[in-house]
Each structure stands twice: as structure tokens, then as C-alpha cells.
Length: 172
Picture: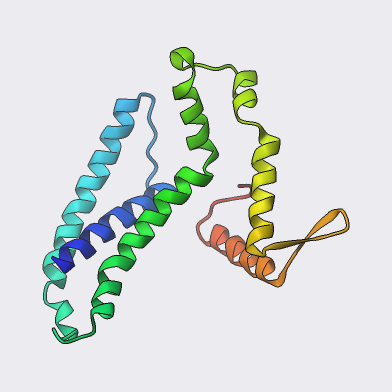
């Protein structure tokens, strides 16, 4: 059971990384093609996950049955937590998801550009992002300017490095 959960977490996490960081490019013109591409990718990763499951079945014997429950909990729930947080932040912070929700909620599921701007105000989005960075301690206010804290500088450098390593290019 434990290795099954770990293998499933591995497969779902790997799927997210491959698609999110465009290691695997899924291009489509119709929604059905997009879903079919994701199903094929998940199927291939599922086969890989089964391999991980059978290959690692013995590997959890390094923890004896008497090991503290907290060690087992970390092995089981840490991967699940990371999958959950990835999904949560995609839904909470993603501009694309928010716009799709607004379009889906609109009459006849269509809005023009001005309609999108009415329901999804960019000024409010940026204000919320800045407030979040202030609350988390990444920024501080000096006069009328925002200045990065040491924590913000460290995060910015790590993000810049990750974008360079993953070849994500400039911009957000």
C-alpha cells in the first residue's frame, strides 16, 4: 500500500513537472485532443509508476515495522501534500484558470476582452499579489516604493536560477 501511494504520487508529480515546465509539449486545437494527449502521457507514466512500484516494493524494508509512525507518515503524506499544494496554488494563483472560470460562468460562455477586464481587474490582481508578498515578508514599503527584503532577494535569485535551468525564458 505504501509503495502504491508513493508510486501514484511519483506519477502525478512527474506528469505535472513534464507538462508544467514544457518538457513534454502538449499542443492541441480541440479540447478532446488535449485530454487524449494527457491520457496518453498519464498512461505512459502509469506504466513507469508500476515499474517503480514493483522495483521499490522491497526498498521500504529499510524502515523496520517498529519505526516511529511519523517516519511512515512522512513517506506517505509528503508526496501527497506536494501534489495537493501544486493543485491548490494552480487554482488559487493562476490567471489562466481564473479567466477560464469567468468565461465558463458568463452567459453563453463568451466574453469580449473588455468583458474579461470588467470581471477580472488586473489592478486588483496586482494589488493582491503585492499584498501577499508584503504579508509573507518578501517586500517592505519604504515611502512610496516597494523594496525587497533579504528573504525576497533569496527567493528572487532562486526563481531566476530555476527559470534559467528549466529554460523558461523571460517574463512570468
